[in-house]
Length: 551
Image (cartoon, rainbow, N blue to C red; front, side, top):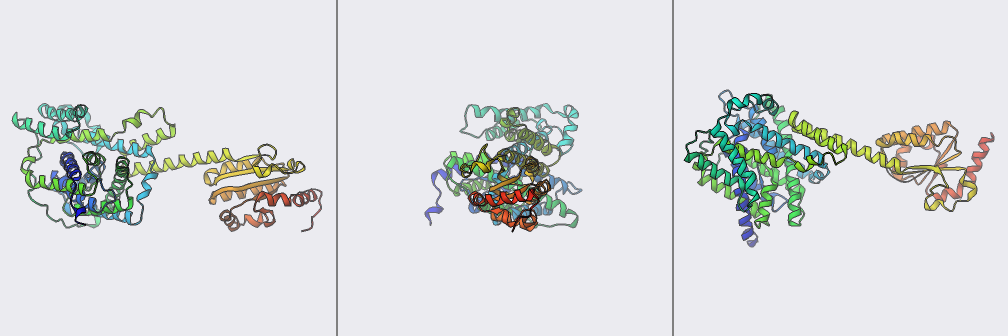
């Protein structure tokens, strides 16, 4: 037991490496949120340690991320007091509720559903977030005063940006971004963002550049923040909490999949959501930013040798040591440097691979990606994801319906019979039309079913092979009912073969059986129908001659 509590050399190196990468990002995210750089550190420390202990992915490193910071900033802006201070108690309530919702998602065992989010939705969403982050940093990176935190308003005000550029400050921001983009091409042994942070900050102090800086951050351990809520803020808090919970869950579980691929392991998605929820609740109570599993920091942890959850704990302890020992040095970091780091992070969010393949992928996928991207930037994160999922679902259902319709055959029996139809006596072949129904009979296939069934008019006996219908919803049942009504009015007799029990229950519930198809026209398999064919065809012939057959 004690041995499991002693970190290995790999866990120590992995945790410290992840902490070094996280440090500049945490400071930048804290400033971007409006809560100050210390909020980024508080969040990374609390969520990083607690999520590592209680989570379901041993090597996952948790901390503030782009999507979470973006939503957190909207909550902060909406709770600014007249004296330009933040009503931290209400902000913390939103963060605390978000963590509680994530914990609930894990308890309800919803952790596995992230794999059903289509790639175009994720790609458009993450690219949109990257674009928003970049837009929001266009003013700080050049030393200009930020007129708004809304990305759309910032885009509209860009013509005025040129007049607000402070060129020495802009040089700091651009240099930071250049180091972040260029250094990884030569070496990845040291985090480019940390190198940029140290070098450019030192240069700004050495050359006496007058630039807006982070300023002093509180020294020592963070204080406990008591949540509070007023009636007029309920809608805002609940809406933000839902966004944070869902974004954090998606971001975390996708990062967990990346970690799985590198470690050849398998994470526990439900436990991971529970761990994330506990971590974000802990971070909220000390005024920290909510976080999520961060893929880049987790990859660094793995590559440096991290293999157990102790590496995530060490990452948090490293940042705590920085907070306690280096807080006096952090105040000299220029805001433009942090803006350059955030622009680099925003560029990392954009799915350039997916965007470059827009002309090569199916048009429906390209449309989903572009719609989600546009809505993310111009409407909101939750709206974008919701619309993207609806579009992707409708496209998927259409594709399934098209495949079902293509696989459903209606032809004289002699054309393409199934194996059990081959030995049917030749005398019966020309008197039968066999309809092979395969796959789901649901609302997406309803129209196709009616169109196919209409081609059976004029036949004498229609055999519906339902052996391979594994799904039938209400719309599909009604489509079958409408088709049977038309067929019956045209004088055609219909028998059902191989109808599954679940589907029979539905048809009996809406009185298709026995009103439109009598129970004597239901056959368990084709062999049973073949045995009854002489009698059935005789009854049809008698009906055509106006003779009522004996029952």
